[in-house]
Length: 280
Image (cartoon, one colour):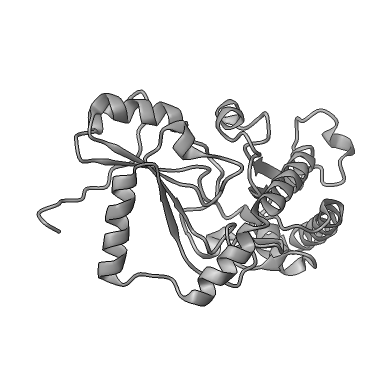
């Protein structure tokens, strides 16, 4: 490690992060955050890092690849992508990528890659190059479809005007997607996610029983833990992370017709909610 020490600390707000920063630190942002779709203000954290001096800002951009969000243009030093997800986009390749703004840093990363041997296979590179040709088409459609479904599901929440007439009224507990005006960071997302709000959202049903059962009741969504592919996926996230609400499902929207996905969700949520109520 060359004497380097690593201490991980929770991320404070942009206004308070300066007190925790020192030269040589890395300020790591995952935005939107998996799986809850929380959003961090990249520009505000960049300003805090510059004020501290000698601090690099790294953004995990897996949930919002270009053209949705461009962290380097917002001042970040580095962007990390799981190319397995949206960049490859067909659930048939694994890998990762680092995008940097500084040519010197890029050269050092290439040297490290050569020394450590962490180069991707030729097939993975070919699959990734194939997929990047349709990245904009896929991601923009997935983002629009996710916003459409999130808005429709949000309309079922108690207290939302007109929710009494929604077919899922009372069966949805919460919906989390940056496109929703009710999202706590919607204004930040609107400013920094200029190409769209992402193809993933989090859905919370009214009961744990319904949430557990939903992935198995859907026809067009596959029960899987990946995301970003052309096929729609859903998972009960508590199965992998006990810190997550047992009501929460992560939804990765594919390129299918959004109205077909809507109909599938409506049918399945009605069915699992009825079964959960009968079992209670």
